[in-house]
Amino acid sequence: MILLFSVTFAALVVSYLADRQKTGKALKLAWKKFSAILPQFMTMLALLALFTTLVPLSRMSDLLQQHTNIWQLLLALALGSIIFVPGFIAFPLAAVLVKNGVPYYVVAAFTSSLMLVGFASLPVEITYFGKRSALWRNLVCLVISLLTALSVGVLYGEFR
Image (cartoon, rainbow, N blue to C red; front, side, top):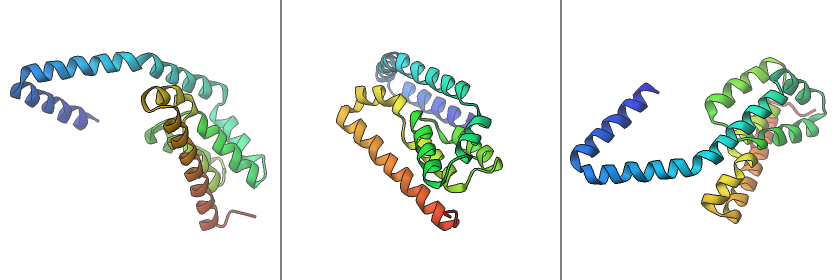
């Protein structure tokens, strides 16, 4: 992460030295865009915090283990589709679920839908991409998550 920040800062310095006016305009525009999306982003973070508070990891593991194959899969897709989180949060979460005995195909469904689908972020997507595009993206990603989970289940021989 430090490397990323260093490279970004160096590029900003080079840009500033090349053309101060353009860099200043770009920074003002970036701040304006950031300020516009910040309330929606904070709402998403609040929903993520609320979700993780209401559904702790131990409860999530229990929920995903107590159903039959198809219900486990659908529940994992539904739980993962609520919020949109990056991989550095999703993968440790998946490791905890696997450690607690949740089948790989269920973890694959949960993790892939967690990273690809995000109905909590839908208002932000609709604002920037349009309603039709945002809905199609989420639907296609949900199908991809389902196909990924089914593939993992077949490869690991987990369907009984």
